[in-house]
Length: 227
Image (cartoon, rainbow, N blue to C red; front, top):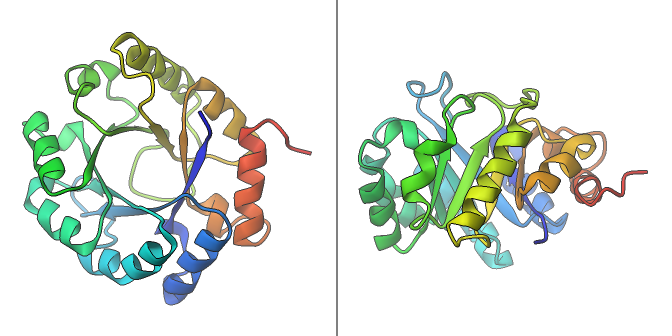
């Protein structure tokens, strides 16, 4: 499976958010990733539906999905708001959804693809019963809340175990996103373990080159073609 790049606007210049989203899309990003944080489930506060609605026309014109990651308590309260704002994917945490199957159904009934994720210390067994129903899975390779953190090395084995779980359950083609600390130098390791979507914020918007150059470097890194 080819690797996709999801540019996380958590690390963008908020004063130029629209322009930076355009640059990421023009530079080859496959998704625009929006990290929604509530200051309760994670120790930070970020975006609401208004930000999703503001960048939706830019992404929609280019045919690029908005990949919205809800790091919030009781996400079911805001699913309809984010769907109406223009989310194409809504990803929720197993840790915040006591009725996860119902939450996934609610997302899909809104016409949005449902993603499911878990924190680094949460075991993969928490995903086992939802595998037949999710549209996408996300492995957090840092503790959520802030951009610019270092990749947790044990995430690689976790990604590989999840890929094997999917193959065994008949869902080998399901996308596995990985979010946190991904750079050109470790992108091949992450992709080689079975990741198909790399969520990158600092490495796209605060990397060494332009946004387009940073995305190209990530693709080359994932393909094992670093200079």
